[in-house]
Image (cartoon, rainbow, N blue to C red; front, side, top):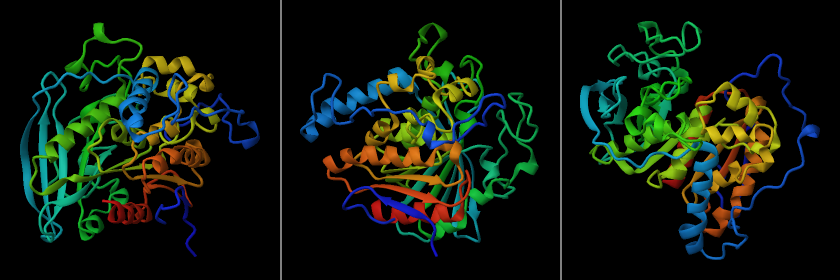
Length: 406
């Protein structure tokens, strides 16, 4: 019996976490303690004017919501353009000739801690450019497959030693350590390319005042205010620059790129999908607070918890809403709505209470009116048994969704 449950959010819809809490800070997992809240209506503008036409949404309400998320949650990404150069560093056949594996370095002017490295597996048994999944990874490209030819990352790593933010480069033993989350042969068999990059290549995941990664390349300390961009916005920026590169790649169909993220990278995928309309489809997996879960529920991870544990993820102004979630002018259902009318799949796990599966489901429900308003039938919520992870069954659901929607 299939225990995975789908919520059909629209009449035409097809069937289809993060950090640990502090020991001395009790976590609310009791629905009876969820505060009473009202959600801001995504189809009512700040001045109270209802959105009555798609033109009003695209010309007024959508830009307004983007601005509010920039000012209060993720921060404003600088508009400065950079001449990013790409260089191939590796190319060979893989998986018995079923794929071409390539690595490219994207050099960002002003970024002193190394290039952004893309790993691309392209299926060889398809005619023309292949649709692709684009996803950040947590521990370096070498961790997604036990392939000795994938270059080892030389960037800062959080893994292996558990010594907090101390720099710890990838070691040969890290090869393939997260292969269970990346079923590359199955992805290729389904006709998709896979494009991945280590999120630490864009911005290392620790709080040092934004002295590392791409932040110094695009702004200076004197330019940073309370709504300056944090790490999630930087990782989203890196995903958009990866798509820039894919637009010039003859083996990938850049108009059919599905953006995927898990946990904090699921938060990133949603923000990248909201800010860059070129992504054809967006999938969020176990993204929780600051991702697909409603902030106002104060269930599991909360705004205060996430800002204490990872103050660099969001803009400084977001901290003003610690314990004051209902004062936020936006909530995460509006982030999901910003991706409409493009397809969105929100995925949760029953045991991942830290990420608040019900809060993710309710956010999807509250975003559904925008998808209906724009005549989109492509918002789906999926709940599976199990924990905070990415599984083979998850990937099957991702690819089934992409088959239908791209």
